[in-house]
Image (cartoon, rainbow, N blue to C red; front, side):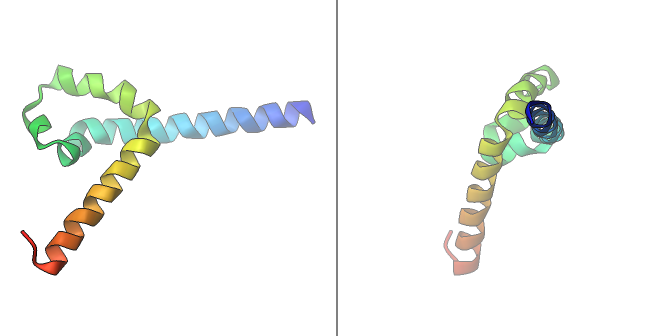
Length: 81
């Protein structure tokens, strides 16, 4: 039982990290500007600094991006500016 649980935890950590790496790269390239338009002018080294944090915090950043998209879509569909 103990080894199965350890293997399951290991796979979960691996899946979290794999999703985080993919999200972190996407976030550094495109996602950061969706949360903060001022990030559009960020240099490549600055964007590379975002990757480790995005890898660890990808669930939180994903939630913030979804919320921002929902607010933007609501404002667009209601005609508000």
